[in-house]
Image 1 (cartoon, rainbow, N blue to C red):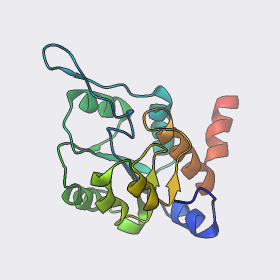
Image 2: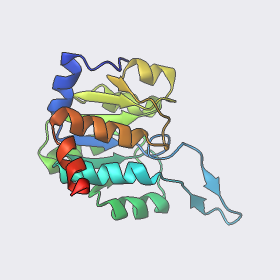
Image 3: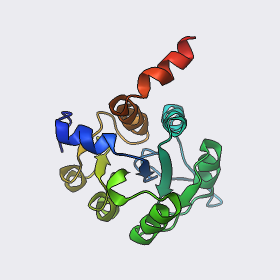
Image 4: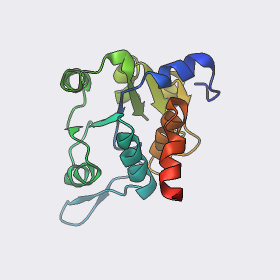
Length: 179
């Protein structure tokens, strides 16, 4: 884990055309809420969602691969315009290969953002691995970059902004709001 943007990390980020996000612990804070009828609720951060949409505007593809299935995830990803959503994949490698085939992106042009041991197989196969600040310590050891904020609380936005800054698209996005 190294948050300084050395030349190697910048090169990895510059090459990115796809980021794959985990859900529980990355797009959410990892807590699971159930009502008395067993319906599941999740809390997503609006800034993470806006960051995803901005990153997509720059041409970077976004996908989701999650070990669990949730109707709330289906709804949120549809709202964000994320086309490649894979749920119920504890072994994430097959879904990863399918995303690469569908997008035409090479593994070294992809990033994965995770928080727990289930994410390690993808983190080892992509060109750039991101971990949230409150990720499992082993996951952090295998990350190229660890966010400064916990999962579900703006960590995805931090990575989206970082990618846009390194790829030189951030200023254009900001300027579109200043006009």
